[in-house]
Length: 111
Image (tube, rainbow, N blue to C red; front, side, top):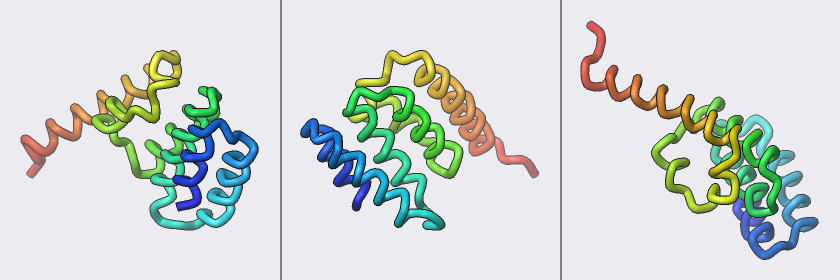
């Protein structure tokens, strides 16, 4: 929940408090099996703060560590501030290819 708090603080333009919440979320989340959700929230906070490189770094972390959710990232309004950034479009292209491949495997699983 600390990463959600960071998102709220960032959207309220309370950047120092958001940064503190991000640091705390990272500190307490180390080793947590579902940290990729925290990484997504941190990406959302950085996007709200107008820091696209940090946002995309954390979004890549979320995708690489177990949350490669192309269909959600495509419509997530929290990511709107970085949607046109070249690194975001590259990430989305990579995730779309992965998503298509997963759909193909699901439709015709190997024996």
